[in-house]
Image (cartoon, rainbow, N blue to C red; front, side):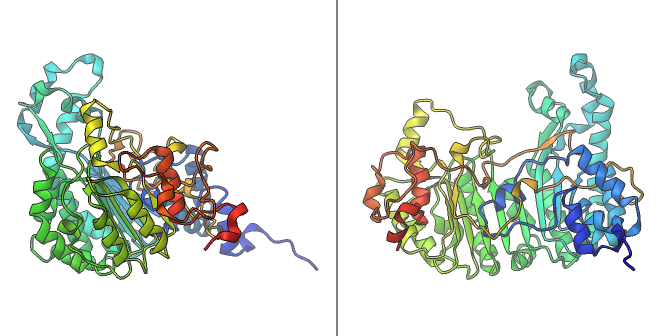
Length: 515
């Protein structure tokens, strides 16, 4: 006699497939060698889950213990913690529940500016703030006092260490800068500087040190670290004691940093030369590395002043942004990694006089046999860039660059038909709305947004290039002389074609001529 099966008779594997129709699978992190890695996993502006999706997962988890465990995979794979007592309390609750803690794979730490000057006089702001702004000055005073108390009592260090120890599946930690409406208002009105001043370097330093210490103390399995808007001075201060950075670097497979500083970045980065060599020599397991700078202040140091001619035997993805370089510098670094490098990102890179992009591209096409994708967004020549600045050309807003809002600025990657991973479904917001018995981490998204540090996005796969842009190598255009590189400027259409040319994209009409 045939007995009808109920949903609880299904295997967990089938139930998870069903669950993916309710909430996108958050557990799988994008491979480090994929072009989409940085935009989707590291520096994508944070967005909450759809309300219906969150509610459906919460309702499902209330059904029974088995569904609760399955739902937790989606609900707690990614967590956000803010620098606040309320957020640390929720994080501690999750850490104390092993069945939830072991699900966490990615931890995003949203850090505000620190109130560092005249903060005892915050009350003086009360009569000066316009009522129309709608700010709650009592909340502002409470926030300042809370911030001071967290630092003094080291509550953040305690909870982070507890949590990272409990997160036995943790793979990725990112540190993001965030500001709310009150912070934005104060930063935008100089008349308040004598009363209260918001600064990012001390906030970044404190939180980087506490995260780093927690990772070391917990012997965490985490191997990925990323941070935009990183002041160079932070690295030197974090390396105290001197073994701290090397201990962290030894376990890293992915490191993504975007440096920013209102003063001379060249001088500050040169001062870190010895330290950077020490760190990069220790990071022998690196598979993905990105180092970027503000697009309106490209670095002028040689690559070897930062990377010291090192070779990483497992490196599959390498990226730099906003740099003035000689063609030979890029060629030498690429050739050192020609056996392993699958992705190369040269965003906002400017070639100096005497160098030609066609020389770089020829090496990428002919020598880099493993290369699967190339990003050349906004590459140019130094002289043209400087002349454009003199003439008043607008430099894109750092917070908007790379937002992937336009197909025009997307990069080319050889399609991987076997991937099947839905990049649009990534970066689910963490936690719940607090309605569930054991869902005590809730998202603070909606009150403010994390800031971007430059253009640290690898965009999503994009539609084919418009027909007006050459998109086929023609089978016979194997010589770099066919690229139309005049050594003066690079147009958007050119660089999009060059990306394809570097990785041998040939249309079906010319497949028979492909090398």
